[in-house]
Length: 494
Image 1 (tube, rainbow, N blue to C red):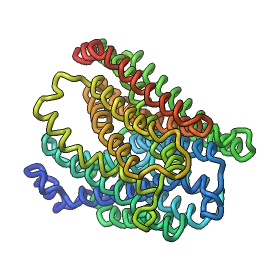
Image 2: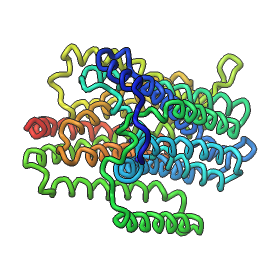
Image 3: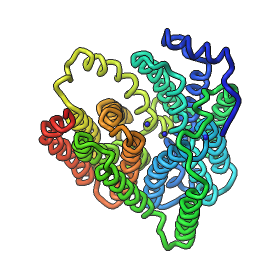
């Protein structure tokens, strides 16, 4: 990191929920059902993400689509951005139109259908249908499953944190296992078998969810802030018309595929600017809240840049691994996707060590701006360490160098992701909390779009100047952010 009437929760379920308030180890069965669903959803999502770039630019003889690499990078970047745009839309629908528990059900089924489409519909049509379905389904599921988890957890903050810790562990587990499963099956049986593995994973998640669907908390079966049907007509018409126009423009070549990531990024910037303006100019925002939101703007921009660099693991790093890394190890070929998947191991593995230093107060004097700056420094260094091999040719780079890069990338996110989302929940104006959360989601989507743009740039520049541009650019951004940190801290502390 993201609603109809039904029967009341059973008495036994209420008792289970109540008992969970006394112990973080006695969370209700519904919570574990949602956590299991999230494992399989992340399994399928990251399982696809790890092999998507390879599927696009691998030749037809290697089982791929043979798409030109710049176009492939544009598609990957636009897809990543679209996933987060859909999470924003899914959260709005779950709050205004369809109950969250139903949105989760629709999302899981749609994601599964997307993976099936990738597996059985050949060529670009299968790619288009599959990616759209997966993005829409992810948008419907992610925000609403998190909201439903919130209804199940006790009010006590420590126990809630414990519950969300378990939920985050489920996310990390699925995100780790998925790429390793699809990467291996792709290497031995081809891409379409890998898509089938992802589809099976989401099917298991759907079954897991259905086991407790009727016993989800009452709040998840209701639309919290319903919108009148008459007010829904115009947004629906505009959305359908816009989707039709964009689809037609792409199909006819009016909107070049390699430019999709630029348009997706531009759309996110416009949405973010409008959201910031709305919150800052609203009469319901107090003067103190307005100052805090203004202080969040440079942090939002820095986080977008950070994720632009980080999410290159799915764009430029895929190209680099394919062209330069020797995957032969002791007579065995390492699946290329496994190197990308390794980032899902290093972050969670090293998080406890970093969190322990925070608990000891070693970072108490550092505000959110400094922590994000530290993340930018680490992720920039992660790519700068590739400079010594940048001038070589052929597959001569050790996979262990790539693992070092991935380890640094994984560690860097520990400084940025929890910091930004925690900050949003703390400074958001009381009446605009969901809108500020949406901005945090769009932050990652903007980074995904930038990663696609950087992937395109990587195909047109020599590697040395490219790495210097990205690495030194990230360090410069970190320096600028750190220089403004004292003022940002004062504004946030009001």
